[in-house]
Length: 263
DNA sequence: CGTAGACCCTGGAAGC
DNA sequence: TGCTTCCAGGGTCTAC
Image (cartoon, rainbow, N blue to C red; front, side, top):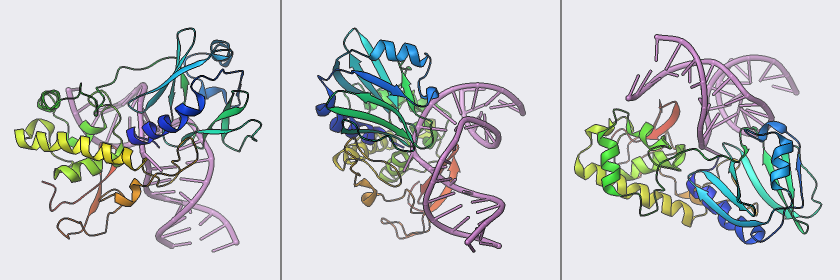
């Protein structure tokens, strides 16, 4: 479900509610959501700890705990983290509850792909941080024979971009998802760089995109879905050139674009 | 090196 | 009202 702007919004809504709280109890109802360690070990390493900070890295949420533990959370397609009053009933797809005494954090995930770990994989730079530069992007583009859609979705190249924002970024940049990365001109690489920053920033400003399941930690939807120009718009007319938008499969995912004005 | 497909799941929408 | 098929904000693995 969530890409960088959605995870960032979850972090911002969750942090003021849980930073400084102590985890008094953890209930796990679906063991497979705990990755790499047993439920017993997970519980042992988390219960009694204080939440020191909440961070985001790409599409991962990082929960820093006292005792030098960091829990990483990935919501995949349909995961939600909801902050609720103490004693709130577990719902059909609630797979874990963290009890803070006055509040509870419920992990809810229809498709059961998301989960918790103590590990964090190596991924590329944060596209909205200074570490992500035009020079870095140019170097990565030159070294790749992949198409642009695949490059944007590659978390090792840039952290946090998913299917919606990849399509919107390519539209913003006026570039076809089928273009081979290494074939971009200097100007095109710069257009792509600027589009990445612009679209993700706008996504955060609108608190993410709610098409199906996404809500923040306070169960609120985002509003960026109203500003989408190509994602899910196949069959509609391009806002830039008035030609018909299409959907094709690239890099294993649905790709929406304008074959007329995305070169 | 790169891509395509299967897979992990549930459920909503569309097609018949 | 079915029943079937396709599709979904992700990532990992295998086969080619």
